[in-house]
Image (cartoon, rainbow, N blue to C red; front, top):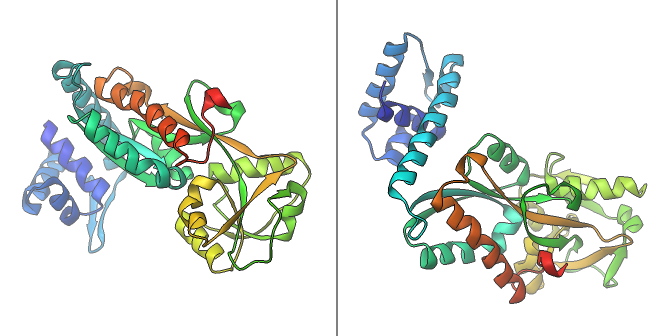
Length: 308
């Protein structure tokens, strides 16, 4: 077993097939197959099940996968500590960002890293909050932008605070500028799945006030939810960042939820194993500056934590 074999094994598992892994790793497929076979022969056990659709991991393969990720992460961190410096951090930093926040943050963050941290390669993974939470807990990211209620922020850095709005199809009759929470029951909603933090933030407040919601559709795709609203098939409960583009173009309308206002915190979490990495620290320190610039410039309808 050597480091290259571990890297190739993890690459094949994460890609789901030898063909995809070969393209991503820029290695011949035959070489990947050889290295994985040598691993299996060395351990005397099957690690992968190969079929026409790709590969799946055996029980032994799963155990090796967990260990291999830890080993490769430690090697990467050691290399960074020996070759990196606070003055000129370099290396790859992986960050997970929810789909809503990504719509306002991704572009400016990538541009800021490119201009201010040119030796850092930022790998950004966008998704719904449920899977992002799980991947962050599993150590798949160095950093993650997450959503929390004010009471569950803990030691994480608060980037912004957002309020929830009822999102309305554009052809609906005129609405007031706000709607009481108790009146939401009248609108058929398309919302994220139950494991989504956005859904939990709203559900907790609704339950506390004895209200009910008419949830017709549970969809773990922000773009699908927005399209359903634009087409008049449903309403939704989202923050302005998620539909800022569509609202500015008149393709949806927003109505502020009041009595009470529902808020959430946008926070930045760091993998404890990566806190000493200069590259991770550099990106970690840059993100709050980018968020503040977006808020102050009116590009993110949120409140900065020290102005809330």
